[in-house]
Length: 376
Image (cartoon, rainbow, N blue to C red; front, side, top):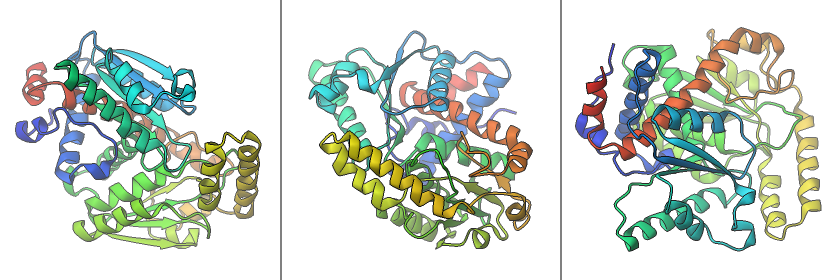
């Protein structure tokens, strides 16, 4: 069944960039996810949605990525665009070019821009805003009428395409009216042990600051020292107060899992060391960066019992397991739990393709609701 799109609410997204979900109102996010659901329906029905044929979709990645690169390329290709993935280390940023200049240079040719810049606190989101400023100023100064949105593909503060994909998946799982699907649901975002590397804070920050806005009762669980940044924590509290949901922080994984309807066990680095890494990065001290990473992993190793296993899942209300992938199997999650939810987390990951499609189409296609209706 086709998803009915509100033409006015959909049109209100035209020309907009997505740099954090907090920048957008709840109604705008609802409209965006309605577009994503309709694009997924059309795609699965084999309907071509090449609404942006032959346009260029650039994406700069300053960190390793598999799923987000794939989602960007898949989304752009389904819209008829030509995806171009740019390695951030190959840009002139390291040679002194500003983010505004990079935005202007790529904006001369690009029709959309994705950026992943997530490793250093205080840098990624501000870089994206400077890129957007450079593109906007170039287009204005040159009289170019193109719309070139910037999409945050993960930064130091938020991972909006991932969090929105998670929300889309949760709405499908719980069913009913999408706008109220999370109301009253107990959702746990928990730290989990990982021996691999000190992962960014942006996924848990994006999840708690988004899901609280839709009436969910969100619990954030982590050991002492693994706090999140103050700003997204404040957003989560504000969202809960406005939506009728709730937000709490605990330091006991069992407590967090008890009675949960969905759980999201995911590792991230200790805040103090993630902050320390900022200074080392500024002076290019590679040895200090390696030392900080090793100390972060040693800190993680004090909490190897923070694992999502069968015993903890039994504390829940037959909860849905979520993960942005790749999960550290045997550390973040037991092999048995992962085997049980392997298809579910793949379906969750696939939602990101349609969220990115929705972002690009809504930002760039005039009268999108009518255009999609004509495809049915």
